Image (cartoon, rainbow over all chains, first blue to last red; front, side, top):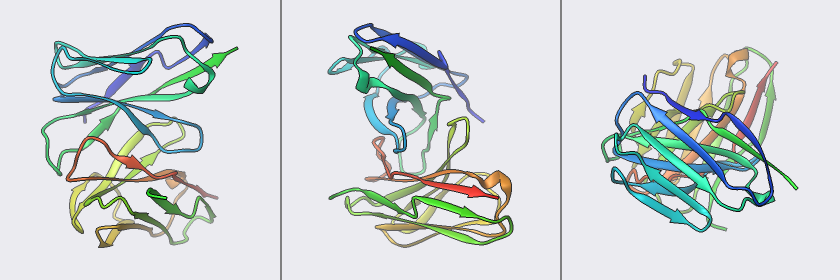
Length: 113
Length: 112
C-alpha cells in the first residue's frame, strides 16, 4: 500500500530555533495534512493543504503542498517547549467519505531550553 | 465538554481473551473511525463508519469486529486477543468524511 516517509525521524533543537521537516510519498495525493500528537493524546490537525504549490500558515507554523503532489513540508519558527510532540503528515486521494487518510511515519520533536 | 471520548483508557488482558473498546462523540459528526498506533507510533486506519454504515474496512483480522449502534457511537470488539494486538487504539470522527478528523485520547491495550 501507500507509504509516507517523514524526515527527520526525530530531532532535538534549542528553544528559539526554526524547524523544518518533510514528508514524501510514492503516490500523488490531492490533500496534504499536518497533525501533531502530544504525549498520551490523540493527533490534532494543524494545517490542511488542498492545491499543489499552496503555502499555508497557522501562527508560527507554515506548510507547503509540493508541486509534484508527492511531498509536503512543515516549518516551525522560533520553537518553544510546547512544540514538543510527534508531527504527522497525512495524505488523502479523492474526497468523499470512503477516502481514507494515510499517515506518515512521524517526526518526533524535542526542544531543549 | 464536546469531544471524542474512549473507554477504557488502559486495558491489560491475557492472550486469548475477548475485549471491547467503546467510543462516543458529541460533535454531531456522521463519520467515525478506528485507528491502530503501534509501538513505532505508526498510525493506520482500521475501519470507518458513515451514518452507521461500514465504508472502510482495511486488511484487519476478522477477530476485530466494529459496531456502530448510532452515529455517535462506534465500538470495537476483539476476539481471541494476541500479543501483536498490543497497541494504542484511537477513535476519531469527522463530518461527512472531511479532512479534519477529531481524535479521542486513545486506549492503550496490552496483551500479556
